[in-house]
Structure formats: structure tokens, C-alpha cells
Image (spheres, rainbow, N blue to C red):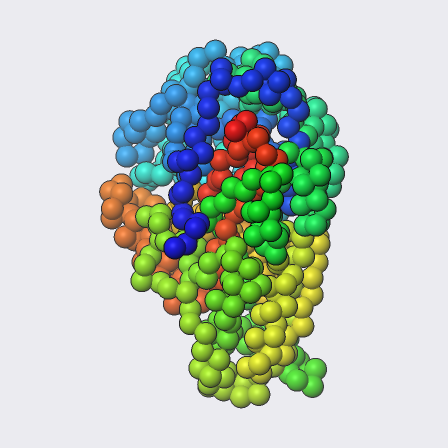
Length: 526
């Protein structure tokens, strides 16, 4: 039996704060994470590691539990006044870290600011694009107007950290990084940020949910797998994420630490370049001569590259059991999963035939770019794929890059094909369909991370139709159709869903999250 099941979290219910021992309530919690946090500005980069840190400092109108259920946040309730108007009733008595009261005006300011952060490598505008007008009814009530029905408005707002108008007006991303603008309503207050090293936080004793048990949180970026694991085994940190796959079984037997794991909703995939008709950079024939045109625009070539990949081998050998082969954004379980879209089979002979049909009987040469410090085994995965592609005639070189440089280059379409990940933290495929494969349109906040510039007007229209469908069952059916359409067109080449694995020192428990975020608020004494 598979020991890791989607949604298996009930056994990790967290005890009430009143039951915590006095020592824990005054302790410092030290967390070691495997990905670098790039900014404290909560609207700068829609990435899970940045969002995780933002969750400590800032709240959202709606929030998601570890198993992705939508629950009240700064909004204590909400209702659809009409098909095009949502009303949110805000909590009374909430204060910013500097003591000023939180009001509906701060929400209105946030909705204006979040889509407009300069130099964002992937922003939050897609979640606010439906809003055409904000109406502040009173200090505790705000109404959000849309031009068309938008049934997922409460879900969208679970992505948007709320910032203070008085602190963030005119503030740059650097003002958040230095702390000047990093004033939230969240459970922890900002102390310091050292890029590439750590973030220091102190408990907000006036937090509206009640004070957290940890007096301080030290959030350290330890991107080297061996160093991160050694730190928790030595007791230098209390919690780590991304336990190295090669060490999971050994750590499972360790008496000093305990594991928490769940099948997550992050898809690791390959993004082939659609941005140019001419041959993209990093593609040539076998003699190094430029190709006549971009081979990746041919669906047969994309399908061949997909069928050349042995996903079972990636999941079991490269990822050592900490991944599941995938053909779509979500693993089985959530309603957004389409059971009619299985992982693509491994068919190298079919791949060779398709390449020949597309005019490449001898294949060609290509470079696969990958981060080497962002996802578990990202560089090893790319190397394994390169070998598989080479076997069918597509001689592949791997170019690994540190994550600090990777998103910016991807956003400038500098790669022929690259490895990347997307986490569907809401438990549905909407974010991926709009952000990753939705036609890039800066003005409409679509395709925010569609760096490979895939475009399919029929797919866009289907997704737009789903977004204005008020009936949940009908909307889910349309989204499943969109997932199937994207898969059939090979909009991306899916690889696998990650299994999220954390380790805590003995005596602590962490609630494993579908969205893979590592939060001090999910850690409690055993």
C-alpha cells in the first residue's frame, strides 16, 4: 500500500495553545528551508517560498488550511450580493503591527497595489483581474465588483496578502526588505532579512487569533541538501523541508527526528519554447548548424519528447520514491484532477517515428536549462531526461543555473526548453491554466509565468467560460476539459508531482501542507 496519500493530514491536528508547555511558549523556532526567499514584499513574486514567509507577517482575507480548505482570514464572512458583486465583512479589532487599526481601506489599497509591483518575475494580478471596482461600504465592509460573474473570488483572495496603506504607499520592494514597509497583521513581526541567508521574526503578542507559541522564528535558507539535513540531525535547526530523497528511508529510522509527508500539488514539468518561428537558441542539427525553423512548434516533436521520457524511472530512481508520475497539474484526489488524463506512456519507438514524420529522422541537438537549487533533484532529473532524449536522437546538453538567475532568464525567453515547477495550492488547475499556459497578456494579467509563450485561443476561451460559470459541478467539468485540451496539445511536458517531506527534531510535529509551504504556525510540540 502507498504510504503517502493525498490529504492524509488528520492525524496531525494541532493542540490548543493553552496546552503548550511554558518552555515551548517562550522558545525560538529555527526553520531550515531548501529554497531562497527573494523578497519580503508579499506582492513581488508569486512563488511558494516567498508566500510562505509572507504568511508569517501578513494575513489574507481568506486562508487555506494544510489540506487546501478555504477558511476565513481577515474576512470573517463573505457573500455574493449578486452575480457580479461580492461583499466581505472584515474582523473587528484587528491591528497592524504598529498599532494602527486595520480597515477596508487597506484592502482597497492592496487590490490596487498587488498587480502593479515593478520588475516582478511573476505577480498576483491574475487573481485580481476580475475586479473592476472596489467599494468601501464602511470600515469593516468592502464590496468587490466584477464585469462578469466571478464565482471563485473568495478563492482568488486567498493568494493576496493584505498590506497597510499607511505603510506601503509609495513603498518599493526594497522598503519591504529593509522592514520599513513590512508592517502586517500576521502572527509574527519582521525583524531582519539577509538575502540568501535568513529572516528573523518576533511574535506578535497582540495577534487577533491569539499569540503563537514561539517567541521568535529564525527562517534560514539552507539550499544545500546535505547541509540542511545535517543541521536538523545535529539539532542546529528544529524543522527542515525538502528532505533529500536519497536519505528519506534512513531518516525514517532516525530516533533524533520525525518525518511528515504528503503527496503535494506541485507539478515539475518542461516548458518548450513557443516564442519564435525561427529556430530558438540552443537548438541545432547534429553538426551544429542552425535549424530552418523552431522544431518545438510542431506538436509531433513535443509529443515525441514527452513519449521519450520514462516517468516511472524518474519517480522511482531519480526521485527515489518521492514523486509520482503525472500527466496533468494535480494528482488524483482533488476535484480538479481529470482521471481521463493519465501520465504519458514511455514509448521511445513511437517518439522516433514522430520525429521522422516531423522531418527529423536523425533528430537534432538541444540544450535543456534547469535550476540546480530550487526543486528536489532538479539537476539530476534534467540529466536523466537528457539521456532519454539522446537515445531517441535528440542529443541533449544540460545547462544548470542557480535559482537566483533562473526566473529572470526564463522570463526573457532565453531558453529552448527549461525545467520548472508550478504548485496548484488551491487544489484546482485554474492557476496553472491562467498563469502557465494562458496566452501571455500583460494588460489582462494573464500568462504571468507563461515564459515559454504557449498560446491556444480555444483553451483560453474554455478557461474563461469556466471562470464565469456559477454552478460548481459545471465549472469543474469545463476545467477538466481544459486540462485534457492542454495535455493533448502538449502545452507543457509534465513529469511528476512531488511528495513533500519535512523533518522535525523529536518532540515536534508539523502539519504537512498540500501547498508545500513551511510555516511556523503549523509546528507544535508533540
